[in-house]
Amino acid sequence: MALSSNAQGFILLLAAASLLAVTEARTIVVGGSEGWRFGYNYTDWALQNSPFYINDQLVFKYDPPSDANSGYSVYQLPNLGSYITCDFSKAKLLASQTQGGGDGFKVELTQWRPYYFASGEKDGKNCKDGLMKFFAVPLPRWNN
Image 1 (cartoon, rainbow, N blue to C red):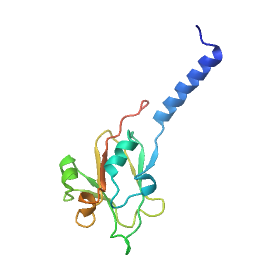
Image 2: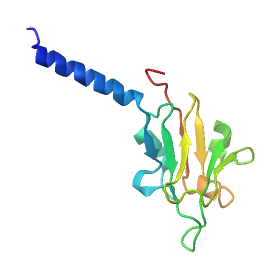
Image 3: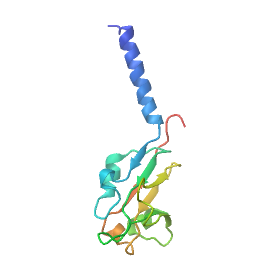
């Protein structure tokens, strides 16, 4: 049975829309409504919100240090070993304790490679005990 021209047009429109969705970069708030905080499992969050794509932006939103929290930061760890052990000795500080307020701190995933993120405050306790770490491997987009 042949499809009507309306049905064919609708299928073509759906295919074009799905391609558009894959090619447009997303802005993703790390942790969603939880933001970047101690005690939230960001590895689970990353698994639930993947795949990530090249040119997606991750936004880290967190409160500055106060009586209620000791402060958070965003580091990029150099490799899987440092990620697993929460070793910040060769990590790069991306955002200090005060840069997560307001609209948050944005990181663009510009390359197809692993990105390892963690909070390095309290001598790595946020990373080790507070689950404040995750990694993302952005996939290439269809039209890149």
